[in-house]
Image (cartoon, rainbow, N blue to C red; front, top):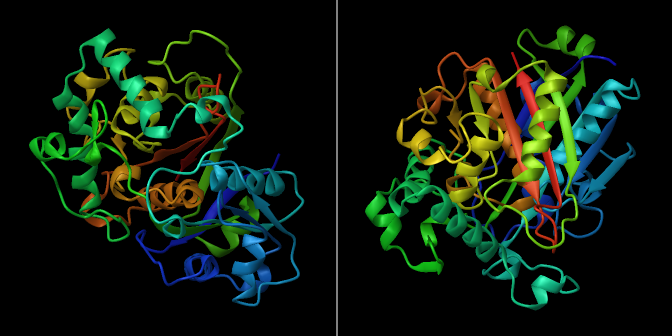
Amino acid sequence: MREVAVIGVGMIPFGKYPDRSLADLGWPAVKAALKDAGIERKQVEAAYCGTALGGMMAGQRILGKIGMTGIPITNVENACSSSSTAMRQAVMAVRSGEYEVVLVIGVEKLTKFGGGTLPLETEDWEVTQGMVMPTLYAMRAQRYMYEFGLTPQQLAGVSVKNRANGALNPDAQMKKPVTVEEVLASRPIADPFTLLQCCPTGDGAAAVIVCSGAFARQVKSNPIWVRASDMVSGIYTPGYRDMTIPEITLRGSKEAYEEAGLGPEDVDVAEVHDAFSIAELLYYEAFGFCAHGDAGHYLDSGATKIGGKVAVNPSGGLLAKGHPIGATGAAQIVEIVRQLRGECGARQQPNARVGISHATGGGITGFDHGVCSIHIFSR
């Protein structure tokens, strides 16, 4: 299979844009990615658009705004992994030789729902009983705290770190640093979570230009190489399962490391799916950054801060950058590419050479998660 590289990225600041259409969120990110890549629109041979709740023909609606019509446009829905799944489709298409240059879009407009938790499918049994995502993660947090002695202060520390990172990111939705005391004093959502331990809802878009290695070398002196593109789906497990182990991410990370020929010791920067504070801690362990049960101490050590052993969510993560769900995977890739290029200013992880993006999607009865997409990049 051919080498694959990223040569262009773009995004709009995440936030609330009640007066903008989905298409008007998306096209500025596409234009920014094209400009960053230094290529013309006509050089893009196909597009993959990820959105979970954006409605039919999202890619066509976006690209029609800027005259990029007639090319194959594939719309991808995979919950919070929608645009990271679109990225995987693009990588596979370039690897196979079908296309030289492909566009990936991630876009979502959650303000149309007026706030509250994300709407889930009512045909799912747990949803009919009142299950929403904050309660699912709250159960994981409660069990982890019981099993391993994680303290409320350590749990709040994830939000403190990521809000501090978000304050350094002009594209983040939440830019105000917070203290542990402020996190714990914010209003209760689902015990043990308070408001500042849950990702905000909002709108956003991000775009990525993917191409063959040969094309990348023609147009860029610093392409970022795709070392692994992995996606796994959840395994139905009725009855008991260990909620302190994110099985789908553990399985996917092993596959991604094997494909890349790398291990956790090689990773300098990671954007992981911290929809709630406990999630980031679970993913430290799933990616092998620390032992099972040791995530709280690993956070306390400073290893995951900018400048630490592996900077986790230097963008601010979902907790601060925001989580317009269909846009998240692509936005994580934007951050990793910028980190590996050394373009992130005050939030730059020094000498970052290898980075990971990770997005999971969907809460379904009997599954750890519905899907998990992981990409590994290097410079």
